[in-house]
Image 1 (cartoon, rainbow, N blue to C red):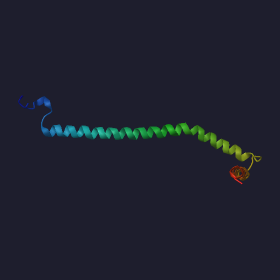
Image 2: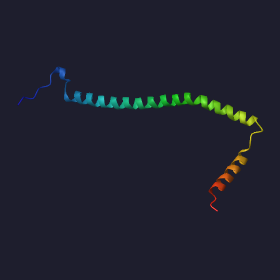
Image 3: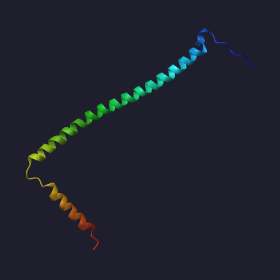
Image 4: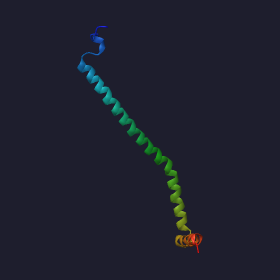
Length: 93
């Protein structure tokens, strides 16, 4: 059996120093992980804004064009016609 090795100056010092280094490494790794999560969330939000900006502006222009056209069929008439069609399809009599 080998005798227990005594810590030397290059081994990291006392038990308190090793404990502090261990706790510091754990704390930094959790802080680093939290920082990565925050950065990922912010990057996702920025990317979402940039990707959706063009479709939002296109949708806004489309709504403005629809409001300018007066010959477009009313939504109520289309809804009523759709409900009538569905009622006739599902009528079992």
